Length: 211
Image 1 (cartoon, rainbow, N blue to C red):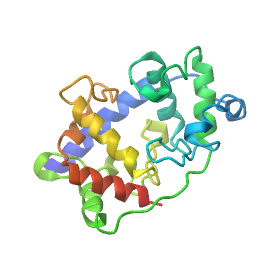
Image 2: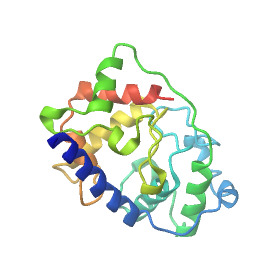
Image 3: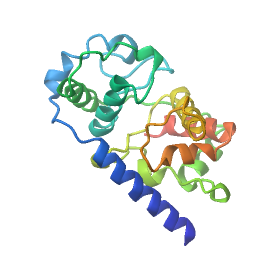
């Protein structure tokens, strides 16, 4: 019962933050296509990057992606490889870019068979003894996320990228040099802080293979 209450409180708290932070202009996918030309060098023309350290943006979720683009532009989420890339972009530009990428189909990935069991356990059940909530609470059992609430779709994302972000959130729990743009509830920082390196590698690999 305590675990259910924890999951519910985390989900509701994260949802309220995501909705408030993700508000913005309505995006135009057609207009966005012409605004992401240079982005294709790292993220692929359709948002499916070929390099595992660059995230797949295709199908990520318009509200979530808009917020991330805003945070990167405004300095709330420092990303060294993105320095200068969004300078001069208006909120409407970012909304259009988010709409375009979110309308694209995400390519698939694979799960390491040796990590599958642990990855599935963490994703679907969390780690109760460390109060780590199941990923399904926000990202859905299929990894498709919850677009209206601003929870990103994870299925098929590069395992290397997911692992790197979880470690950045884990650092951000105690150190501002990590990733800290998960809202006042600190849901991702709290979750990542309770995961070991092996658990992070396993759940990242499991997510990559979700269809």
